[in-house]
Amino acid sequence: MNNSTEAAAAENYMDKLIREDIEAGVYSREICTRFPPEPNGYLHIGSAFATHTNYGIAQKYGGTFHLRFDDTNPLKEDMEYVKAIIEDIEWLGCSPGEHIYYGSDYSEQIYNSAVALIRKGKAYVCDLSPEEVTAYRGTLTEPGKDSPYRSRSVEENLELFEGMRQGAYPTGSRVLRATISMASPNINLRDPVLYRIIHAEHYRTGDAWCIYPMYDFAHPIQDAIEGITHSLCSLEFKDHRPLYDWVLEELGIEEAPRQREFGRVNLTGVVTSKRYLRELVAGNYVDGWDDPRLPTLRGLRRRGFTPESIRSFVREIGMVRNQTMVDFSMLEHCLRQDLKSSVPSIMAVLDPLKVVITNYETAATEWLTLANNSENAELGVREVPFSGVVYIEREDFMEEPSPGFRRLIPGGEVRLKGAYIIKCNEVIKDEATGEISELRCTYDPLTKSGSGSSERKVKGTLHWVSANHGIAAEVYLYEKLLKDNDGPKAEGETWEAYINPDSMKLMKHCLVEPFAASARPEDKFQFMRQGYFCADNKLSSRERLVFNRIVPLKDTWRGGK
Image (cartoon, rainbow, N blue to C red; front, side, top):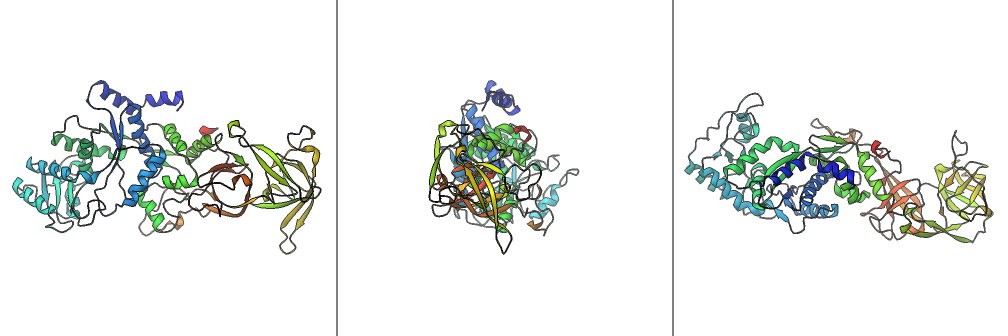
C-alpha cells in the first residue's frame, strides 16, 4: 500500500469509529473482528471485500481476525463449502490461523441464552404458521398485531421450548419469538423469530439438534462468546443492528461487541448473488463454481487473477458507506499492475499462419536471446529458437491492406521480434477454399536484432513461433458472462436471454514458445500483443497445455490511464 492510499485509509469513517472506541477504553481486550460466511456456496469478489475489510482492521490495530462459519441451517450447508472457503481465504492472504470457529459449536450456549430470555419474559413460543407470522407483522406504514400466543406464561414457554428441543413437534409447527414490540417502526423488532424447528441432519452435529437459531439471534451471541469487539458487516444489516444490540443488552453482556456497517460492492457485468450463482452452476450454464467467467474466488483464481491484485482492488475502493457499483475494468487494471513486471513476456500465436523463409537454410536452427521482461531485468533472459519456417498471427497479414495497416502485406517488410526483417514475396492459397495457407518470404541476414550491423528500420514488428519448436496449446478467450448486470427477475424466466454468447471462445490450434512447455497450473505469462495468460489449473497438464486469457493488454479503466 503506498503512502497516499495509507493516508486515505487512515481517514475513513470506520477507522474513526474504532479509534474513538480505543481512546475511550471501551474494551479491555484487543481489537477482534470476524468474517462469518454461511457454508452453502463459494466465496466471490464481494466476499473478498468483506474478508479483507475485517482482516485489514484487525491487522491495522494489532488485533485478531476470526473466520466463523454461520452453520445454523442444516438444509443448505456442506463440508465441501467449508473446505473451499478456508482454502480461498488463505489463498487471498487473509489467513485466520488457529482462529477458525463454527457457530454450531455454540449450540448449547445459544440455547441457554434463549432459555434466559424466556425466564425474563422476553421470549415466547408461538404457534402461528410462517404465513400468519408474516401477516401479523404489518407493513412499513402499519403496525403489526400481537400473536395470540404472546401471553403464555414463563412456565408454559419453558415447557414448550424444551419440547421443541426434544423433537416433540414437527418441522415448522412452532417457533420461539422475542417479546419486543409489534408496533416498532423497525420491522426487525416486531417480535422476531429466534428459533425454528428443522428435522434434518446437520453436517457437523448430526441429529443432536432439531431446533436451530436464526442468524440475527445467534450472531451477537457468537460474537460475544469469541470476544469480538467490532462486528463489521455490509449495509443490508444496518436495520438489524437494533436487534443485535437488544439481544446483547437483554443477556447482560459486558463490553458487548458493536455492529458497524460498510457499503456493499457490486461489479459491472457479473452477478454475486449466491442464488443466481447457484442457478448458473446447477443449470450447466457455466463449468462449475470455478468457471473463469464467474466472480467466485475459485473462478478468478482459475482465470489467473492473483491474491495481490484482489487485495489491491479492495484497497483502491477503500471503505464505502453506501452500496457501490464498480467497473470490472478496475479489477483488471489492478491485475495488470501486479503482473506487468512480475511475469515473463513470451511469444504465442493463437491463429497460426505459416511463413516459409525461402533463403534461410532449411535445416538450420538459430538461438536468439530475448529478455523475459523489459521492465524487470531480474527475470533474466531466455533462448528462443529461430528456423526457416515460422508461424505468425493470421490477422498480422492482409492481402489488401486497410488504411493505417502496419503489419505484413504482399511486397511489404516487417521485423520478426528479436530476429530479422522479412519481406513477403508470394501468397499461397488453398485451392479448395481460397484461404491463405502460406506466405513465402525472404529475410535480410544483415538485420538481426541487436547486431548493430544494420540501421534499416521498418514500421511493423510481429511476434512469431518456430514451426519446428513450437508447443501446441489451447487458449480460452473470455469476455463478460452476462450481457448486462442483472439476472432474471421474473418467475420462469431463464438465463438464455442474459448470457453473452461470446463470453468464451476456444482457440484450439495455438503455438507457444518452448519456454512455456513446462508451465504448471496457475503459471502466468504475458503473450506479446495478446494479453496476460494463465495455465488453467483444472485442464492444463504436461500432456495438454491449456491457457486462459486473464485480461487483454489494453487498460480500459479510466483510473489506469
